[in-house]
Length: 500
Ligand SMILES: Cc1cc2nc3c(=O)[nH]c(=O)nc-3n(C[C@H](O)[C@H](O)[C@H](O)COP(=O)(O)OP(=O)(O)OC[C@H]3O[C@@H](n4cnc5c(N)ncnc54)[C@H](O)[C@@H]3O)c2cc1C
Image 1 (tube, helix red, strand yellow):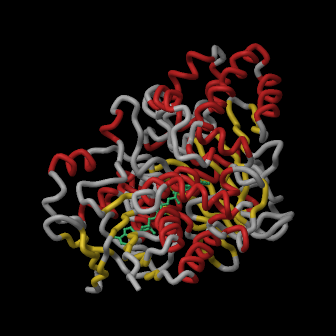
Image 2 (cartoon, rainbow, N blue to C red):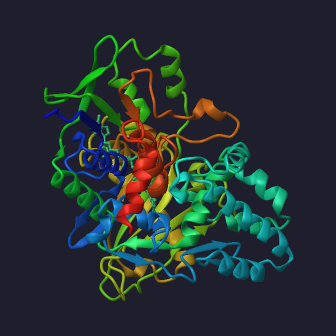
Protein backbone atom coordinates (compact mmCIF):
# COMPACT_ATOMS: atom_id res chain seq x y z
CA UNK A 1 0.00 0.00 0.00
CA UNK A 2 1.29 3.49 -0.85
CA UNK A 3 1.73 5.65 2.25
CA UNK A 4 -0.43 8.80 2.39
CA UNK A 5 1.50 12.05 1.93
CA UNK A 6 2.28 13.72 5.24
CA UNK A 7 0.97 17.24 5.87
CA UNK A 8 2.11 19.28 8.86
CA UNK A 9 -0.26 22.15 9.67
CA UNK A 10 1.12 24.92 11.88
CA UNK A 11 -1.52 26.51 14.12
CA UNK A 12 -4.79 25.10 15.43
CA UNK A 13 -7.12 28.07 14.92
CA UNK A 14 -10.05 27.82 12.55
CA UNK A 15 -7.59 27.99 9.63
CA UNK A 16 -5.41 25.13 10.82
CA UNK A 17 -8.25 22.90 11.94
CA UNK A 18 -10.30 23.39 8.78
CA UNK A 19 -7.25 22.67 6.57
CA UNK A 20 -6.47 19.66 8.74
CA UNK A 21 -10.01 18.36 8.43
CA UNK A 22 -10.24 18.72 4.63
CA UNK A 23 -6.86 17.11 4.00
CA UNK A 24 -7.35 14.24 6.45
CA UNK A 25 -10.77 13.64 4.86
CA UNK A 26 -8.96 13.42 1.51
CA UNK A 27 -6.48 10.79 2.65
CA UNK A 28 -3.51 12.90 3.63
CA UNK A 29 -1.78 12.09 6.92
CA UNK A 30 -2.29 15.27 8.93
CA UNK A 31 -0.41 16.53 11.98
CA UNK A 32 -1.53 19.84 13.52
CA UNK A 33 0.98 21.68 15.73
CA UNK A 34 -0.25 24.26 18.24
CA UNK A 35 2.09 26.39 20.36
CA UNK A 36 -0.45 26.98 23.14
CA UNK A 37 -1.81 24.60 25.75
CA UNK A 38 -5.29 25.00 24.29
CA UNK A 39 -6.35 24.54 20.67
CA UNK A 40 -8.51 27.02 18.76
CA UNK A 41 -6.56 30.29 18.46
CA UNK A 42 -9.30 32.94 18.23
CA UNK A 43 -11.89 30.23 18.97
CA UNK A 44 -10.49 29.86 22.49
CA UNK A 45 -12.66 30.50 25.52
CA UNK A 46 -11.75 30.73 29.19
CA UNK A 47 -13.73 30.17 32.38
CA UNK A 48 -13.48 32.02 35.70
CA UNK A 49 -15.52 31.21 38.79
CA UNK A 50 -18.36 29.60 36.88
CA UNK A 51 -18.56 32.09 34.01
CA UNK A 52 -17.30 31.38 30.50
CA UNK A 53 -15.92 33.96 28.06
CA UNK A 54 -15.20 33.96 24.33
CA UNK A 55 -11.91 35.64 23.44
CA UNK A 56 -12.31 35.88 19.65
CA UNK A 57 -15.16 34.67 17.51
CA UNK A 58 -18.52 35.68 18.98
CA UNK A 59 -21.06 35.22 16.21
CA UNK A 60 -21.29 33.82 12.73
CA UNK A 61 -23.46 34.56 9.72
CA UNK A 62 -25.11 32.82 6.80
CA UNK A 63 -25.65 29.76 8.99
CA UNK A 64 -29.39 29.14 8.58
CA UNK A 65 -30.33 25.88 6.81
CA UNK A 66 -29.59 26.21 3.08
CA UNK A 67 -27.12 29.08 3.54
CA UNK A 68 -23.42 28.77 2.76
CA UNK A 69 -21.99 28.57 6.26
CA UNK A 70 -24.61 26.04 7.28
CA UNK A 71 -23.49 23.82 4.37
CA UNK A 72 -19.84 24.27 5.28
CA UNK A 73 -20.52 23.48 8.94
CA UNK A 74 -22.36 20.31 7.96
CA UNK A 75 -19.41 19.29 5.76
CA UNK A 76 -17.01 19.86 8.66
CA UNK A 77 -19.25 17.68 10.84
CA UNK A 78 -19.87 20.64 13.16
CA UNK A 79 -23.65 20.51 13.15
CA UNK A 80 -23.68 17.20 15.06
CA UNK A 81 -22.17 18.73 18.17
CA UNK A 82 -22.30 22.51 17.86
CA UNK A 83 -25.54 24.25 18.77
CA UNK A 84 -26.31 27.68 17.35
CA UNK A 85 -28.61 30.30 18.79
CA UNK A 86 -30.07 32.90 16.43
CA UNK A 87 -29.57 36.55 17.30
CA UNK A 88 -32.72 38.65 17.17
CA UNK A 89 -33.73 38.49 13.48
CA UNK A 90 -35.28 41.95 13.85
CA UNK A 91 -32.06 43.41 15.29
CA UNK A 92 -28.94 41.27 15.20
CA UNK A 93 -26.84 44.45 15.40
CA UNK A 94 -27.72 47.66 17.19
CA UNK A 95 -25.77 50.80 16.37
CA UNK A 96 -26.00 53.71 18.81
CA UNK A 97 -24.98 56.97 17.14
CA UNK A 98 -25.89 60.60 17.63
CA UNK A 99 -28.36 59.83 20.42
CA UNK A 100 -30.35 57.32 18.33
CA UNK A 101 -30.31 53.53 18.07
CA UNK A 102 -30.46 51.80 14.68
CA UNK A 103 -31.45 48.15 14.42
CA UNK A 104 -30.20 45.87 11.63
CA UNK A 105 -32.71 43.14 10.71
CA UNK A 106 -31.87 39.96 8.77
CA UNK A 107 -32.96 39.74 5.15
CA UNK A 108 -32.49 42.11 2.23
CA UNK A 109 -36.11 43.26 2.08
CA UNK A 110 -36.41 43.71 5.85
CA UNK A 111 -33.22 45.78 5.73
CA UNK A 112 -34.60 47.89 2.84
CA UNK A 113 -37.86 48.50 4.68
CA UNK A 114 -36.21 49.39 7.99
CA UNK A 115 -33.55 51.66 6.53
CA UNK A 116 -35.96 53.35 4.10
CA UNK A 117 -38.05 54.18 7.16
CA UNK A 118 -35.00 55.56 9.00
CA UNK A 119 -33.80 57.48 5.92
CA UNK A 120 -36.77 57.94 3.52
CA UNK A 121 -34.93 60.30 1.18
CA UNK A 122 -32.29 57.70 0.49
CA UNK A 123 -34.67 54.89 -0.47
CA UNK A 124 -33.51 54.59 -4.10
CA UNK A 125 -29.85 54.72 -3.17
CA UNK A 126 -30.41 52.10 -0.49
CA UNK A 127 -31.77 49.77 -3.18
CA UNK A 128 -28.63 50.32 -5.26
CA UNK A 129 -26.48 49.69 -2.17
CA UNK A 130 -28.29 46.43 -1.36
CA UNK A 131 -27.89 45.26 -4.96
CA UNK A 132 -24.16 46.04 -5.05
CA UNK A 133 -23.56 44.32 -1.70
CA UNK A 134 -25.44 41.26 -2.89
CA UNK A 135 -23.65 41.19 -6.26
CA UNK A 136 -20.21 41.34 -4.62
CA UNK A 137 -20.99 38.71 -2.01
CA UNK A 138 -22.61 36.27 -4.40
CA UNK A 139 -19.59 36.43 -6.72
CA UNK A 140 -17.69 34.31 -4.19
CA UNK A 141 -16.98 30.75 -5.33
CA UNK A 142 -17.82 29.42 -1.87
CA UNK A 143 -21.29 30.97 -2.10
CA UNK A 144 -22.04 29.15 -5.34
CA UNK A 145 -19.91 26.04 -4.62
CA UNK A 146 -18.54 26.33 -8.13
CA UNK A 147 -14.82 26.80 -8.49
CA UNK A 148 -14.78 29.76 -10.84
CA UNK A 149 -15.05 33.44 -10.15
CA UNK A 150 -18.50 34.22 -11.51
CA UNK A 151 -18.29 37.97 -11.32
CA UNK A 152 -14.65 38.84 -11.07
CA UNK A 153 -15.30 42.37 -12.29
CA UNK A 154 -17.59 43.22 -9.38
CA UNK A 155 -14.95 42.01 -6.96
CA UNK A 156 -12.04 43.71 -8.66
CA UNK A 157 -13.76 47.08 -8.85
CA UNK A 158 -14.88 47.08 -5.22
CA UNK A 159 -11.56 45.73 -3.96
CA UNK A 160 -9.95 48.84 -5.40
CA UNK A 161 -12.40 51.40 -3.97
CA UNK A 162 -12.59 52.33 -0.31
CA UNK A 163 -15.75 51.92 1.75
CA UNK A 164 -16.13 55.66 2.36
CA UNK A 165 -15.57 56.50 -1.30
CA UNK A 166 -18.33 54.11 -2.47
CA UNK A 167 -20.74 55.24 0.26
CA UNK A 168 -20.09 58.86 -0.72
CA UNK A 169 -21.03 58.14 -4.32
CA UNK A 170 -24.23 56.38 -3.24
CA UNK A 171 -25.59 58.50 -0.39
CA UNK A 172 -26.01 62.13 0.63
CA UNK A 173 -27.10 61.60 4.24
CA UNK A 174 -23.99 61.68 6.41
CA UNK A 175 -25.67 59.93 9.37
CA UNK A 176 -26.76 57.02 7.13
CA UNK A 177 -23.18 56.65 5.86
CA UNK A 178 -21.98 56.34 9.44
CA UNK A 179 -24.74 53.98 10.55
CA UNK A 180 -24.03 51.59 7.68
CA UNK A 181 -20.48 51.16 8.95
CA UNK A 182 -21.58 50.98 12.58
CA UNK A 183 -20.28 47.42 12.75
CA UNK A 184 -16.83 48.31 11.44
CA UNK A 185 -15.00 46.99 14.53
CA UNK A 186 -15.91 43.56 13.10
CA UNK A 187 -13.39 44.14 10.35
CA UNK A 188 -11.32 46.99 11.74
CA UNK A 189 -12.12 49.15 8.74
CA UNK A 190 -10.04 52.24 8.09
CA UNK A 191 -11.02 55.46 6.36
CA UNK A 192 -9.78 55.71 2.75
CA UNK A 193 -8.11 52.29 3.03
CA UNK A 194 -10.43 49.34 3.60
CA UNK A 195 -11.96 48.05 0.35
CA UNK A 196 -15.71 48.27 -0.08
CA UNK A 197 -15.73 44.55 -0.96
CA UNK A 198 -14.74 43.76 2.66
CA UNK A 199 -17.72 45.74 3.94
CA UNK A 200 -20.00 44.04 1.40
CA UNK A 201 -18.97 40.52 2.41
CA UNK A 202 -19.52 41.17 6.12
CA UNK A 203 -22.79 43.03 5.54
CA UNK A 204 -24.16 40.23 3.37
CA UNK A 205 -22.84 37.46 5.66
CA UNK A 206 -24.76 38.71 8.69
CA UNK A 207 -27.71 40.12 6.80
CA UNK A 208 -28.48 36.56 5.72
CA UNK A 209 -28.58 35.33 9.33
CA UNK A 210 -26.61 35.75 12.55
CA UNK A 211 -25.98 33.20 15.29
CA UNK A 212 -24.05 32.81 18.52
CA UNK A 213 -22.52 29.46 19.36
CA UNK A 214 -24.27 28.03 22.42
CA UNK A 215 -21.72 27.42 25.16
CA UNK A 216 -18.94 29.26 23.30
CA UNK A 217 -17.10 29.17 19.98
CA UNK A 218 -14.49 26.76 21.39
CA UNK A 219 -17.11 24.06 20.68
CA UNK A 220 -16.22 24.45 17.00
CA UNK A 221 -12.53 23.92 17.68
CA UNK A 222 -13.15 20.83 19.83
CA UNK A 223 -15.51 19.36 17.27
CA UNK A 224 -13.11 19.92 14.35
CA UNK A 225 -10.22 18.49 16.38
CA UNK A 226 -12.26 15.40 17.31
CA UNK A 227 -13.22 14.87 13.68
CA UNK A 228 -9.60 15.15 12.52
CA UNK A 229 -8.48 12.65 15.15
CA UNK A 230 -11.35 10.26 14.40
CA UNK A 231 -10.12 10.07 10.82
CA UNK A 232 -6.59 9.30 11.97
CA UNK A 233 -5.03 12.79 12.09
CA UNK A 234 -2.92 13.97 15.03
CA UNK A 235 -2.95 17.19 17.05
CA UNK A 236 -0.24 18.36 19.42
CA UNK A 237 -0.57 21.25 21.86
CA UNK A 238 2.46 22.89 23.51
CA UNK A 239 4.17 22.20 20.18
CA UNK A 240 5.55 25.53 18.99
CA UNK A 241 6.98 25.34 15.48
CA UNK A 242 10.40 26.98 15.63
CA UNK A 243 11.81 25.96 12.25
CA UNK A 244 10.52 24.86 8.90
CA UNK A 245 13.37 22.72 7.67
CA UNK A 246 14.10 22.89 3.94
CA UNK A 247 16.54 21.20 1.60
CA UNK A 248 17.70 22.98 -1.58
CA UNK A 249 14.32 22.71 -3.23
CA UNK A 250 11.50 22.26 -0.71
CA UNK A 251 10.34 21.92 2.89
CA UNK A 252 11.12 18.56 4.49
CA UNK A 253 9.61 18.95 7.95
CA UNK A 254 8.94 21.11 10.98
CA UNK A 255 10.91 21.31 14.21
CA UNK A 256 9.21 22.22 17.48
CA UNK A 257 10.59 24.11 20.48
CA UNK A 258 10.97 20.90 22.48
CA UNK A 259 13.27 19.46 19.81
CA UNK A 260 10.82 17.17 18.01
CA UNK A 261 10.98 16.88 14.23
CA UNK A 262 7.85 16.24 12.17
CA UNK A 263 8.69 15.10 8.63
CA UNK A 264 6.41 16.55 5.96
CA UNK A 265 5.64 16.17 2.28
CA UNK A 266 3.65 19.41 2.59
CA UNK A 267 3.56 22.17 5.19
CA UNK A 268 0.60 24.49 5.68
CA UNK A 269 1.20 27.53 7.83
CA UNK A 270 -1.82 29.27 9.34
CA UNK A 271 0.15 31.55 11.65
CA UNK A 272 0.77 35.24 11.10
CA UNK A 273 3.05 35.62 8.02
CA UNK A 274 5.64 37.57 10.03
CA UNK A 275 5.84 34.70 12.52
CA UNK A 276 6.18 32.31 9.56
CA UNK A 277 9.12 34.23 8.09
CA UNK A 278 10.88 34.07 11.47
CA UNK A 279 10.88 30.27 11.36
CA UNK A 280 11.66 30.01 7.66
CA UNK A 281 15.42 30.16 7.34
CA UNK A 282 15.99 29.29 3.69
CA UNK A 283 17.39 30.98 0.60
CA UNK A 284 14.32 29.77 -1.29
CA UNK A 285 12.50 32.79 0.12
CA UNK A 286 13.81 35.98 -1.44
CA UNK A 287 14.73 39.05 0.63
CA UNK A 288 12.30 41.17 -1.43
CA UNK A 289 9.42 38.89 -0.39
CA UNK A 290 10.45 39.13 3.26
CA UNK A 291 10.64 42.93 3.05
CA UNK A 292 7.22 43.14 1.45
CA UNK A 293 5.51 40.84 3.97
CA UNK A 294 7.22 42.51 6.93
CA UNK A 295 6.03 45.92 5.71
CA UNK A 296 2.32 45.03 5.50
CA UNK A 297 0.32 47.04 8.06
CA UNK A 298 -1.82 45.27 10.67
CA UNK A 299 -5.44 45.61 11.66
CA UNK A 300 -6.07 47.25 15.04
CA UNK A 301 -5.77 45.48 18.37
CA UNK A 302 -8.17 45.86 21.25
CA UNK A 303 -8.76 46.00 24.98
CA UNK A 304 -11.32 43.45 26.18
CA UNK A 305 -13.44 43.70 29.29
CA UNK A 306 -14.88 40.31 30.25
CA UNK A 307 -17.84 40.72 32.56
CA UNK A 308 -19.47 38.20 34.86
CA UNK A 309 -22.96 39.47 35.71
CA UNK A 310 -24.74 39.20 39.04
CA UNK A 311 -27.35 36.49 38.97
CA UNK A 312 -30.67 37.72 37.53
CA UNK A 313 -29.34 41.27 37.12
CA UNK A 314 -28.81 41.68 33.37
CA UNK A 315 -31.45 40.51 30.86
CA UNK A 316 -29.85 38.48 28.05
CA UNK A 317 -29.24 40.89 25.15
CA UNK A 318 -29.85 39.06 21.89
CA UNK A 319 -28.20 41.73 19.76
CA UNK A 320 -24.63 43.00 19.35
CA UNK A 321 -24.40 46.57 20.59
CA UNK A 322 -22.06 49.09 18.95
CA UNK A 323 -21.82 52.34 20.92
CA UNK A 324 -19.99 55.49 19.83
CA UNK A 325 -19.29 58.51 21.98
CA UNK A 326 -17.27 60.22 19.27
CA UNK A 327 -20.24 60.61 16.88
CA UNK A 328 -18.72 58.35 14.21
CA UNK A 329 -17.53 54.76 13.91
CA UNK A 330 -14.57 55.94 11.81
CA UNK A 331 -11.11 56.53 13.23
CA UNK A 332 -11.82 55.14 16.70
CA UNK A 333 -8.44 53.38 16.43
CA UNK A 334 -6.75 56.80 16.49
CA UNK A 335 -7.13 58.49 19.87
CA UNK A 336 -5.32 60.78 22.26
CA UNK A 337 -4.94 59.11 25.68
CA UNK A 338 -7.77 61.15 27.21
CA UNK A 339 -10.15 60.35 24.31
CA UNK A 340 -10.19 56.58 24.92
CA UNK A 341 -12.58 54.81 24.39
CA UNK A 342 -14.16 56.45 21.37
CA UNK A 343 -16.42 53.48 20.74
CA UNK A 344 -17.10 49.91 21.82
CA UNK A 345 -18.71 46.63 20.85
CA UNK A 346 -20.69 44.97 23.65
CA UNK A 347 -21.99 41.37 23.41
CA UNK A 348 -23.44 38.74 25.68
CA UNK A 349 -22.34 35.15 25.64
CA UNK A 350 -25.01 32.54 24.95
CA UNK A 351 -24.28 30.12 27.80
CA UNK A 352 -27.31 27.99 26.93
CA UNK A 353 -30.26 28.13 24.55
CA UNK A 354 -33.21 30.25 25.66
CA UNK A 355 -31.22 32.20 28.22
CA UNK A 356 -33.29 34.78 30.15
CA UNK A 357 -30.49 36.41 32.15
CA UNK A 358 -26.99 36.97 30.86
CA UNK A 359 -24.20 35.31 32.80
CA UNK A 360 -21.25 36.82 30.98
CA UNK A 361 -20.42 39.30 28.26
CA UNK A 362 -17.56 41.11 26.63
CA UNK A 363 -16.89 44.72 25.72
CA UNK A 364 -14.22 45.40 23.11
CA UNK A 365 -12.60 48.71 22.26
CA UNK A 366 -9.64 49.38 19.98
CA UNK A 367 -6.30 49.72 21.71
CA UNK A 368 -2.86 50.37 20.27
CA UNK A 369 0.07 48.10 21.10
CA UNK A 370 2.10 51.22 21.89
CA UNK A 371 -0.16 51.82 24.93
CA UNK A 372 1.15 48.62 26.53
CA UNK A 373 4.52 48.37 24.78
CA UNK A 374 6.40 49.00 28.03
CA UNK A 375 5.28 45.53 29.21
CA UNK A 376 6.41 43.71 26.05
CA UNK A 377 8.58 40.76 27.00
CA UNK A 378 6.68 40.07 30.23
CA UNK A 379 4.44 37.01 30.47
CA UNK A 380 0.75 36.51 31.26
CA UNK A 381 0.06 36.86 34.99
CA UNK A 382 3.52 38.33 35.67
CA UNK A 383 3.36 41.81 34.20
CA UNK A 384 3.36 43.65 37.53
CA UNK A 385 1.16 46.03 39.51
CA UNK A 386 1.52 48.98 37.15
CA UNK A 387 0.04 46.90 34.33
CA UNK A 388 -2.82 45.75 36.59
CA UNK A 389 -3.53 49.35 37.48
CA UNK A 390 -3.46 50.35 33.76
CA UNK A 391 -6.04 47.62 33.10
CA UNK A 392 -8.25 48.70 36.05
CA UNK A 393 -8.25 52.30 34.87
CA UNK A 394 -9.20 51.30 31.32
CA UNK A 395 -11.86 48.88 32.55
CA UNK A 396 -13.36 51.73 34.55
CA UNK A 397 -13.41 54.06 31.56
CA UNK A 398 -14.94 51.42 29.32
CA UNK A 399 -17.63 50.59 31.88
CA UNK A 400 -18.49 54.27 32.18
CA UNK A 401 -18.84 54.49 28.41
CA UNK A 402 -21.15 51.44 28.23
CA UNK A 403 -23.19 52.78 31.16
CA UNK A 404 -24.06 55.89 29.13
CA UNK A 405 -25.73 53.71 26.50
CA UNK A 406 -26.95 50.86 28.70
CA UNK A 407 -28.04 52.32 32.06
CA UNK A 408 -27.68 49.80 34.88
CA UNK A 409 -24.75 48.00 33.22
CA UNK A 410 -22.28 48.82 35.96
CA UNK A 411 -24.54 47.80 38.82
CA UNK A 412 -25.08 44.38 37.22
CA UNK A 413 -21.35 43.54 37.07
CA UNK A 414 -20.34 40.97 39.70
CA UNK A 415 -16.69 40.79 38.61
CA UNK A 416 -14.59 41.40 35.54
CA UNK A 417 -11.37 40.38 33.80
CA UNK A 418 -9.45 42.23 31.13
CA UNK A 419 -7.05 41.64 28.28
CA UNK A 420 -4.86 43.94 26.18
CA UNK A 421 -2.99 43.74 22.85
CA UNK A 422 -0.27 41.83 24.73
CA UNK A 423 -2.77 39.06 25.46
CA UNK A 424 -3.58 38.58 21.76
CA UNK A 425 0.11 38.55 20.98
CA UNK A 426 0.75 35.86 23.60
CA UNK A 427 -2.23 33.66 22.79
CA UNK A 428 -2.24 33.80 18.97
CA UNK A 429 1.15 35.18 17.96
CA UNK A 430 -0.51 37.82 15.81
CA UNK A 431 1.70 40.83 15.00
CA UNK A 432 1.15 43.80 17.34
CA UNK A 433 -1.80 41.88 18.84
CA UNK A 434 -3.80 42.74 15.71
CA UNK A 435 -7.29 41.29 15.94
CA UNK A 436 -7.69 40.25 12.34
CA UNK A 437 -4.10 40.00 11.09
CA UNK A 438 -2.87 42.03 8.13
CA UNK A 439 -4.84 45.06 6.95
CA UNK A 440 -6.10 45.63 3.45
CA UNK A 441 -5.46 48.96 1.76
CA UNK A 442 -6.94 50.01 -1.57
CA UNK A 443 -4.00 52.36 -2.13
CA UNK A 444 -1.46 49.57 -1.92
CA UNK A 445 -3.26 46.81 -3.83
CA UNK A 446 -1.30 43.57 -4.22
CA UNK A 447 1.59 44.93 -2.14
CA UNK A 448 -0.42 44.16 1.03
CA UNK A 449 -1.72 40.77 -0.14
CA UNK A 450 -0.46 37.62 1.55
CA UNK A 451 -0.25 34.87 -1.08
CA UNK A 452 -1.26 31.31 -0.27
CA UNK A 453 1.59 29.93 -2.40
CA UNK A 454 5.29 30.53 -1.79
CA UNK A 455 8.52 29.96 -3.69
CA UNK A 456 8.79 26.79 -1.63
CA UNK A 457 6.64 24.52 -3.80
CA UNK A 458 5.26 22.42 -0.92
CA UNK A 459 4.63 25.23 1.59
CA UNK A 460 1.20 26.89 1.55
CA UNK A 461 -0.35 29.61 3.68
CA UNK A 462 -3.88 29.67 5.07
CA UNK A 463 -5.68 31.35 7.98
CA UNK A 464 -7.02 34.85 8.36
CA UNK A 465 -4.07 36.62 6.73
CA UNK A 466 -4.73 34.98 3.38
CA UNK A 467 -8.00 36.15 1.80
CA UNK A 468 -9.75 37.51 4.90
CA UNK A 469 -10.51 36.97 8.60
CA UNK A 470 -13.68 35.62 10.22
CA UNK A 471 -15.57 32.40 9.75
CA UNK A 472 -16.22 32.92 6.04
CA UNK A 473 -12.92 34.63 5.19
CA UNK A 474 -10.84 31.91 6.83
CA UNK A 475 -12.79 29.06 5.20
CA UNK A 476 -12.23 30.64 1.77
CA UNK A 477 -8.49 30.83 2.54
CA UNK A 478 -8.55 27.20 3.66
CA UNK A 479 -10.09 26.07 0.39
CA UNK A 480 -7.55 28.12 -1.57
CA UNK A 481 -4.62 26.50 0.25
CA UNK A 482 -6.09 22.98 0.24
CA UNK A 483 -6.91 23.25 -3.45
CA UNK A 484 -3.18 22.87 -4.09
CA UNK A 485 -3.58 19.28 -2.88
CA UNK A 486 -7.27 18.54 -3.51
CA UNK A 487 -8.97 20.28 -6.46
CA UNK A 488 -11.29 23.05 -5.25
CA UNK A 489 -14.16 21.63 -7.28
CA UNK A 490 -13.76 18.30 -5.48
CA UNK A 491 -14.03 20.11 -2.13
CA UNK A 492 -17.17 21.91 -3.33
CA UNK A 493 -18.63 18.59 -4.50
CA UNK A 494 -17.93 17.11 -1.07
CA UNK A 495 -19.70 20.05 0.57
CA UNK A 496 -22.69 19.47 -1.70
CA UNK A 497 -22.68 15.71 -1.00
CA UNK A 498 -22.57 16.30 2.76
CA UNK A 499 -25.71 18.39 2.40
CA UNK A 500 -27.78 16.00 0.31
C1 LIG B 1 -11.68 39.81 19.46
C2 LIG B 1 -12.06 39.09 18.20
C3 LIG B 1 -13.39 38.95 17.87
C4 LIG B 1 -13.76 38.26 16.71
N1 LIG B 1 -15.08 38.08 16.43
C5 LIG B 1 -15.45 37.37 15.34
C6 LIG B 1 -16.81 37.06 15.10
O1 LIG B 1 -17.70 37.41 15.90
N2 LIG B 1 -17.13 36.36 13.98
C7 LIG B 1 -16.17 35.93 13.08
O2 LIG B 1 -16.51 35.27 12.08
N3 LIG B 1 -14.85 36.18 13.31
C8 LIG B 1 -14.49 36.88 14.41
N4 LIG B 1 -13.16 37.11 14.66
C9 LIG B 1 -12.16 36.67 13.68
C10 LIG B 1 -11.90 35.17 13.75
O3 LIG B 1 -12.00 34.73 15.07
C11 LIG B 1 -10.52 34.88 13.18
O4 LIG B 1 -10.39 35.49 11.92
C12 LIG B 1 -10.21 33.40 13.02
O5 LIG B 1 -10.67 32.65 14.11
C13 LIG B 1 -8.70 33.27 12.81
O6 LIG B 1 -8.34 31.93 12.64
P1 LIG B 1 -6.85 31.57 12.20
O7 LIG B 1 -6.74 30.11 12.23
O8 LIG B 1 -6.51 32.28 10.96
O9 LIG B 1 -5.89 32.25 13.29
P2 LIG B 1 -5.78 32.04 14.84
O10 LIG B 1 -7.09 31.75 15.43
O11 LIG B 1 -5.01 33.21 15.35
O12 LIG B 1 -4.91 30.73 15.00
C14 LIG B 1 -3.52 30.70 14.83
C15 LIG B 1 -2.98 29.65 15.79
O13 LIG B 1 -1.60 29.45 15.51
C16 LIG B 1 -0.93 29.26 16.73
N5 LIG B 1 0.48 29.54 16.51
C17 LIG B 1 1.08 30.75 16.31
N6 LIG B 1 2.41 30.57 16.13
C18 LIG B 1 2.65 29.23 16.22
C19 LIG B 1 3.82 28.43 16.11
N7 LIG B 1 5.03 28.96 15.87
N8 LIG B 1 3.69 27.08 16.25
C20 LIG B 1 2.49 26.51 16.49
N9 LIG B 1 1.35 27.24 16.61
C21 LIG B 1 1.43 28.58 16.47
C22 LIG B 1 -1.61 30.24 17.66
O14 LIG B 1 -1.37 29.92 19.02
C23 LIG B 1 -3.07 30.07 17.26
O15 LIG B 1 -3.71 29.06 17.99
C24 LIG B 1 -12.76 37.74 15.85
C25 LIG B 1 -11.41 37.87 16.19
C26 LIG B 1 -11.06 38.53 17.35
C27 LIG B 1 -9.62 38.64 17.72
